[in-house]
Length: 161
Image (cartoon, rainbow, N blue to C red; front, side, top):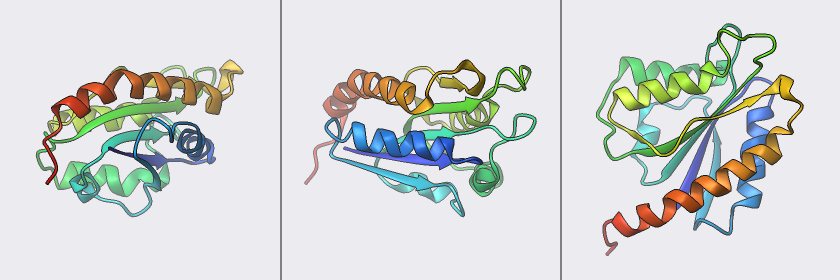
């Protein structure tokens, strides 16, 4: 099974978390692909994969600039995504933005859910003001998330010809 990590980032922290997961979790899945959201649209979800949205939060709870086109596509070109299984990692700064903390990833979660996609597990959040290293915490969460959900996904996946 392929894990496709879609990255929305402003300061490259989300990209660093995704790249750390790519290196550390390679033993758990057949393939991991990290892809920045730049220029993507809803068709990115046509590919058979387990998706992981790794998104920072920009400004007052917005998705990052490089994720704007994908988010807009989900809104303006809605299509049923019932085949999509995904997780969400949402980064933010609760100390500076308590009311909109980690809303970038949560906006993707809400939109994907509205389109019929199924989130696996809880949304993981990272608070930049916590002092916790995001790469370390992200790897730990992702390893647990994959170990919990991959066996079920593999058992229910259609047989490949």
